[in-house]
Length: 250
Ligand SMILES: NC(=O)c1ccc[n+]([C@@H]2O[C@H](COP(=O)([O-])OP(=O)(O)OC[C@H]3O[C@@H](n4cnc5c(N)ncnc54)[C@H](OP(=O)(O)O)[C@@H]3O)[C@@H](O)[C@H]2O)c1
Image (cartoon, rainbow, N blue to C red; front, side, top):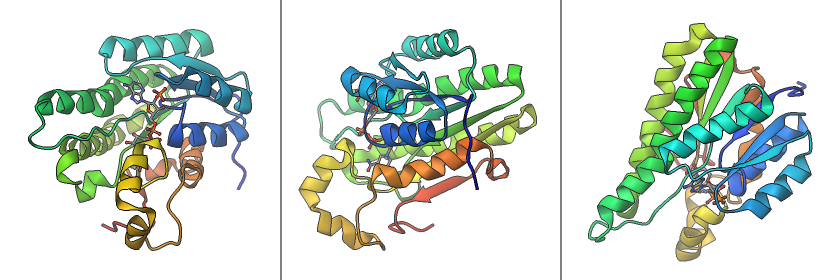
């Protein structure tokens, strides 16, 4: 199977690090031009753009603010002319115990980045894709959407469950407009986001829950996303692909 993404413009959010960076590089190997979104890590985003080539560009936006989500989409359209695929990957996992005095603030911050921004970017993408009668959306959720999470991550799990439900609705509602929508739901992945927890619990503990012999890495997520972006799996629209080394099979 040959995946050719030449002449495809793909917006990847949270592409400066971790899973988003690996996805962007893999898409780039198939020829895609990537809009590399970042928030704080400009240098890292620039490095990724250089590695990928294909006239890829970097775009800054703090997705916590709705207006920035809109600006991001507009900026990418202005620079690239059109978008073929959007990958909503940017996310945050804020530790928030029940008795945290900032619990509501942490809940809102989690929801604004992990769910509201995804909703806004999907809205904009759908309207754009409708004019082209073609487009793909890939949303990165989490195993936590199905399994739940620990007491400190109630908002995180709830936000990811929202992403799954949003994606299913999009797949059902806009298929006839040529739009497909998929979810990829990782378990533990060795990135900055998981670092603290991996240090707290230890790799061995996490590995006990996996059926494979090493922790999942960003490079293990990227090929599936590339396949979904290619259009070769369009009839799987609405589906969630679990990539969690069988740590949660549902
Ligand atoms: N790692 C895991 O174990 C795991 C498991 C399941 C699901 N996931 C999901 O996979 C996705 C990627 O996670 P990761 O592990 O690669 O995370 P990561 O290494 O912490 O990277 C997070 C990315 O999101 C961006 N981001 C964070 N807050 C943002 C904000 N307010 N506005 C805009 N961008 C923001 C960051 O941009 P800057 O670096 O430029 O600030 C960065 O590019 C997330 O949706 C996460 O929930 C991760």
